[in-house]
Image 1 (cartoon, rainbow, N blue to C red):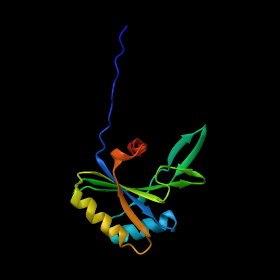
Image 2: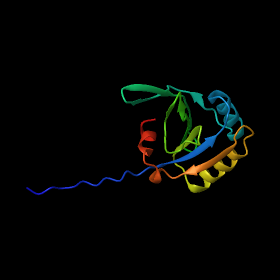
Image 3: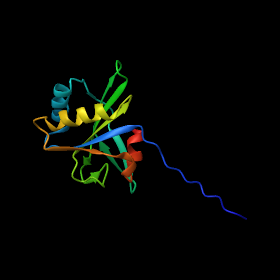
Image 4: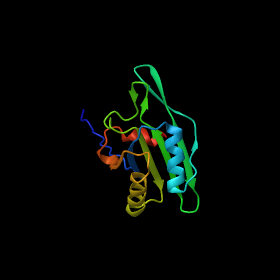
Length: 138
């Protein structure tokens, strides 16, 4: 009997900006709302189950209906559990989905870097992340 191998490479239609900040989630969200001129609000926490234990990560959302773009701010730490363990230096992830382009992502990255409570921010390529699929369930 012959074997068929199914190879699947997901296509990610979103951008991710990793953020390092020592602020609490709600405080960082307030500064990002002010600087990016958006209105993210706290949503339901994301639940991640690993080794039969649940970890909850705070999440903030905003949808810009005019340009059809959705923004999310996701916490990377929940106690000793990481949402995305391969990016340990990031405290938060800023996800951009919808009708995005490189220009919009570059502008947002620049604005986030200039935010007074952000130590550093850098763009991540979802295709290069081992667990980028976690962002699909957000």
